Image 1 (cartoon, rainbow, N blue to C red):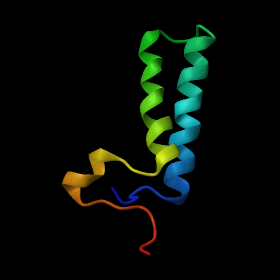
Image 2 (cartoon, rainbow, N blue to C red):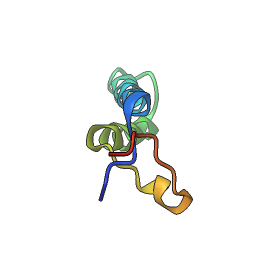
Image 3 (cartoon, one colour):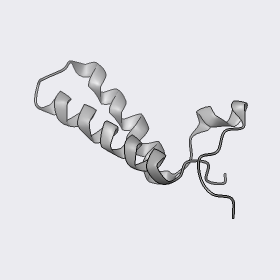
Length: 62
């Protein structure tokens, strides 16, 4: 499981994830906002399973 999410992609995922979870906790959006856990987790670990079938990679090659 090598990293396939890098740089700005990771930052955006974490920000969007936190925003969705925060909005859910604040009562601004419904329970669907808990889906923010997915981008938060993929941004935190740097790996996205949805990128695999398409061969996408947004991080620099080592």
